[in-house]
Length: 434
Image (cartoon, rainbow, N blue to C red; front, side, top):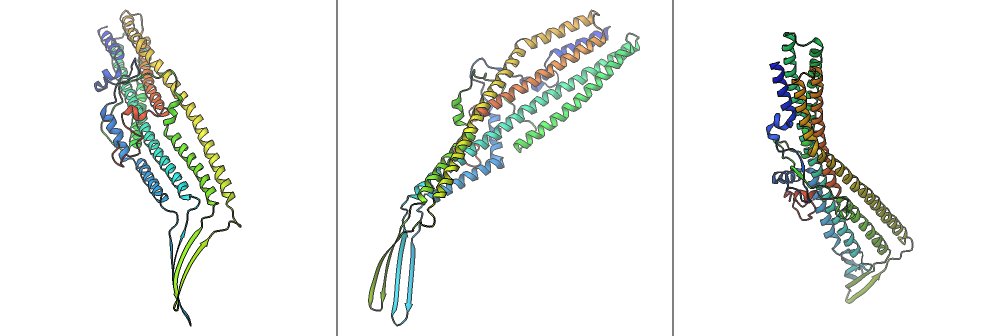
C-alpha cells in the first residue's frame, strides 16, 4: 500500500504540473498568454536580430536585392536620350576631289523616352515590392518553423515523461505482483501501455528532428539554442480591415506590373509616331565649298505598329485581371486567417481559464479515488493516460495558436511591424537586414 500511494502521488504531481515544469525547467516561460488589449508584449530583440541574420544570409533576399539594383540600372538607362548622333566622314578622289563631314541626329519626336522612364520606374517599384515579398515570406517561414520546432520539443518532453511514468508504474506492478496483490492482467496492461509510450516517444523524437531540420532549411543557420517566440500575443481583431491589403507585398508587385503594362501601351502608341532625323553636312569639292541640310522622316507604310498597340492593350488588360484575381484571393485569405486565429485563440483562452484548473482537479480526485481503493490499477492507468493525452492536445493547440497568428500577420502584411523591423524599405543595403 505504501508503494501504491507513493507512486500515485508521484504520478498525480507530475500530471498536474505542466510538462515544461516537470521535464524541462527551462521551458517554464513558454506557455502562451493572450493579452487583454491590442498591444502585445514586445518581441525579444534576439528574435529580431535572428530574423535580420536570416535575411542577410538568404540567397533569395540577396537575389531580390540584385534584381532591385538591375531595375535601377535599367531606369538610369531609360532616362538617357533615346538616340545618339551620327558622324559621317566621306572622301572621294577622282578628277574632282571631294571631302565632306556630316552630322545627323534623330529626334525623339514622340517622347518615347518619357514612356520608357515611366515603365522603368514601375519596374523598380515591382522589384522593391518583390524584395519585400521575399523578406516577408522568409520571415513567415522562419517564424512558422520556430513554432513547429518548439511545439515538437514540448511534445517530445511530454512523451518522455509519459515513458517515465509508465516505467514507474510497471515497477510498482511487479512489486505488487510479487507480493500477490495484483493479477497478471494488470501487469500485461501496464507492459502494453509502456510499450505504447516508448513508441510515442520515438515518434516524438523523430518529429523533433524533422522540425529542427525544417528550421535549419528555412533559415540556413544551425544553432544550439534557437530564439523563442514571445510569450504574449495581441488578441485578434473583431474583423479584418480590407485597407491592410494595400500594403501586401504580392499585391504591390502586381500593381506595379499592371502600371508597367499600361505604360507599354503608351510606348507602343508612341512607337507609331515618326521620329525625324536632321542632318548637317559640310565639305569641299575642289575649290568649291559644300553645305547641306537633310531631313529624313520614316514612312509607316508597310508597318504602322497598330498590332503592337493592340497586343500591349491586351497584355495590360491581362495584368489588371491578374491583379483583381489576386486581390480577391488575398481578401479571402485575410478573412480566413483571421477566422482561424479567432477560433484557436478562443479555444486556448478557454483552456487557460477553465481547462487547466479542471485538469488539476481531475488529478486530485483521481488520487483520492485511488487511495480510497475505489479505482483498480487498470482504471487508474487509463485515467492517467487520458490526462497526458489532454496535455498533449493542449500543447498541440498552443502550436496551432502560434501558426494561426503567424498566418494572420502574413495575410495582413504586419510581420515587419510585429517584429519591429522594416521589410518594406527600398533603401536597405544588401547585408544590413534592417
